[in-house]
Amino acid sequence: MKHRRPIAARARCGGVWVGPSGYSQPLLSGTALIDRPIADVFAFLAEGTNDPKFSPRVIEIHKEPDGPSGLGTIFVSRSRTPHDH
Image (cartoon, rainbow, N blue to C red; front, top):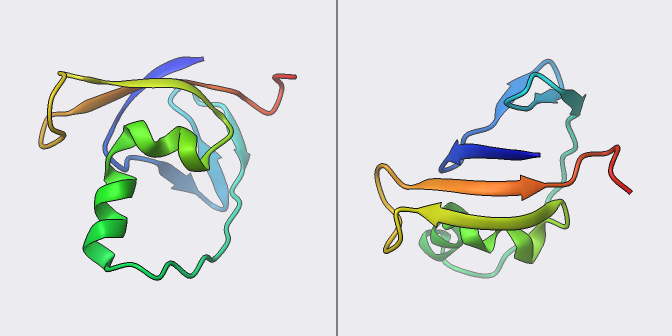
């Protein structure tokens, strides 16, 4: 599956994550203690090309346009679904 997503855009609906194609799956949550300044953590998570470092679902990702991320940056990714083996 290939889709575009702006920085930190995810839709939640009653405990279910709804993807851009309308496919839904249970919403999982967890907690992690990160001993870093909040600005560093936000910068790491906002840079979508870091997603494969913490999400095994991400197969590939790149950003458009090239260069520093900011307003208007789009991350294009291909991710595994629960049905992928």
